[in-house]
Amino acid sequence: MIENMMHDQASGLRRMTKLASTKVITVSGGKGGVGKTNITLNMAIAMARQGKRVMVLDADLGLANVDVMLGLRAGRNLSHVLSGVCDLRDIIIEGPYGVKIIPASSGTQNMAELSSAQHVGLIRAFATLEDEVDVLLVDTAAGISDMVLSFAGAAQDVLIVVCDEPTSITDAYALIKILNREYQVQRFKIVANMVRSYREGRELFAKLTRVTERFLQANMELVACIPLDDRVRQSIKRQKVVVEAFPRSPAALALTTLANKALTWPVPNNPAGHLEFFVEKLLVKPTPEEVPLGE
Image (cartoon, rainbow, N blue to C red; front, side, top):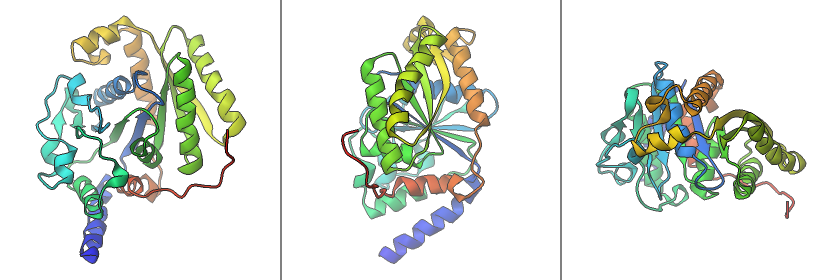
C-alpha cells in the first residue's frame, strides 16, 4: 500500500514538470482585516489583463471568501478533491479575464493533519492540471496557523500585508519571525495597505523593519503602498475588484503597479521553482532551528 502511494506520488510529480515555470506567490498577513484577499484578487485580475494565465488558490480553509468576493458560486471545493469525490479541474471556477479560482473547503482541517493518502491526493490533484499556469496566487488565512505557515514557507515569494494598526505590525512580525526561524524564509515583500500617503506607508515599513533588523536575519522590501480609497469599498459591495470597477482610481493604479512589478520577480532556475516542489514543500514539516526565546 505504502509503495503504491509512493509510486503514485512520484508519477504525479513527474507529470507536473510542464508547470515548471509557474510563479508561486503567497499573500498573507498577521491579522484579519488588512485586505489580503482584496489585494490577491486585484493582482490576479491585473495580471490576467496582461495576458497571463493566473490561478488563485483560496487557502483559507476556515473562512473561504474568494469566490464570494467575485460574486461566483462554487458547487464543490478542495475538500471534495481531497476526499476523492472529484478531480481538481472539476472544482475550478472562472473569474473575470479568465482567472481560475480554486475554492477552499469550508472547514478547519489543517494540512498538517492530512493523511498520507490525502498528501498523495493533493499532489495528484495538481498533476491533473492540463493547462500551464503562469502565476499561482495563494490567499492564506490570517494568523500563524500551521496552514498559513506551510503555504508561505513553500512559496517562492511571500507578500505580507500590513495596515496602520498596532496589532497589524506586531502580528506581522510574529508571522515573519516564525517563517524566518522555522521555515528558513529569508525574503519578505511588504505591502502597506489603506495608507493615507506614501509617507505613511514608509513609516509603517520602518516600524516593522526596526524590529526585524534587530532580531532576525531577514531581507525586507516594501513593494507597494496602496492608498486608502473609498472606491475599494464600493467595488467590494458590487462584488467586483477595484482594478476592474474603477481602473483609474488611486488604489487601482497602485494595485496594477504592484501586479506588474510582481510579474518581473524571477522564477528560480532550479527544481525549487517548480510548482510540484511547492506542493511537495507544502506537505513537509520543517525542522525548527534552535533559537533564543523571548524575542
